[in-house]
Length: 326
Image 1 (tube, one colour):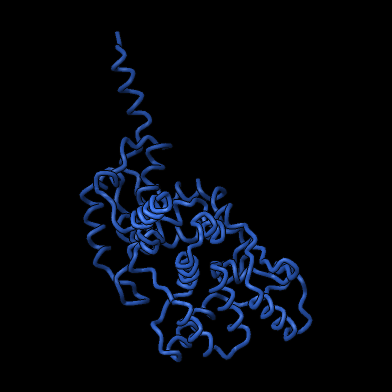
Image 2: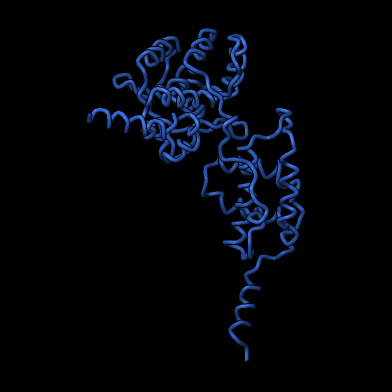
């Protein structure tokens, strides 16, 4: 008579993933499962990571042969690799994204295809979610020096909007004239621009909290008004900046050289705005809401090193309270 252990053994064997399945086949199942669940640009990013970094190494391997040691060897290889485009080692955040994707594929196999364990867990992780040395900022003085060299009205406006709002570049490029409220001095962020497979695509913003109204300083709103007067018959649904992001990427490189400043990335203008707010004592919750972060923790994780020493601030306030009682 068969015992309970026999039935359990048969059940586990039946649901176990075929160890002869290739990693390529598993990754295709993973992507098919995600197809309707994530944004198109996120899907394309995962697809690119797979084809560029994971399939060349793991593609033909069978799942049963991908052990923690094999993954560790891939990690060591990618840690030393250099980007064909920049000729530099991959950033810590990029490495983290690659490793996270690999682990997600195996987690999918564990949850839905009976793989008994995720080999990535024993291999350990690489990269960092955020990296201090990848965040560069311009002070207000440096930004003013930069913006004084920008002689194209459209770029002059775009860079001002990025620096003074903390918007993501995709959010800026998706803006149309209807998104500007001149009576409240606000910009309504409800969408994001992506360039996907040689086409301009307007998508949902990065997170739910990314949909927000950003109140702007009046001088920037005035610049938007002035620029609109220069545009030929602007329609409400027309994009204010009908460009790809590389237009701004090339421009920041060119004009920062002219201004004799350290070159920063477009996204660093967002970091610079956050730094400006932090240095002026703005509440972290307000900063998080303005940047469109899903959680305040995200803001703290990225910018914690920019906040003043909390212990010193705390004790100074307590000392002041105690002195006022005397």
